[in-house]
Length: 287
Image (cartoon, rainbow, N blue to C red; front, side):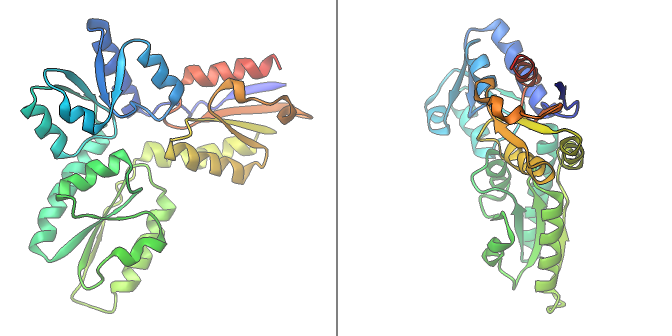
């Protein structure tokens, strides 16, 4: 049985940057706080916890003073920086550059919206760390839409300035844009400004992983269960190969999955470490 690891899977550059920043700080100090899980992969989080990383909530962060805190790749709203300044907290800002550019665009878009009686709409997942940071650029006034069923949250008597969470589906964004255009087309005084702010390193994974899934008998998709990117990409695999299985640890592998199998593909999310996929591949080879 041949086992192949998808060369396109594994950490995106934003996650690589955040983990490198954490490891460099932990080489100098025994403790480093991190606002939320540094990455949505429990095994990678546990590896870094063993080095001294302490995951804290925003409530716990607000009580800290004279500490060092890492901002993960998802980014943070302005309020986080204000608290850090007030409480003498040194921030290691590992926000993904793509996310920081998006935050800047949304701040600018929000100022334009205020001048033009428009509204900011964000295509994203409510409560997601990145989305919280994006909404914070609008004084928490942006409207979050995660699917077509959410569009009634939008005020169709106002123009729309639309942005997207960086990890959303390109097809989903395009569908949303077309529906919004249809809804406001009757009023010639209104406009829709659609900003495709999806990270191409993430969106390109969809066709790549679909092809990878088709060329193997069995697909083992490795991801943390809290990773929205992982859930999305696993569903792409399942759509293209019904013998696709989602695991978070090598211990979840089942020998029955590999009956009458000559080729196994191991892949994962942008939050899945390569060392974990390699461990899964080794475990499959000895089944």
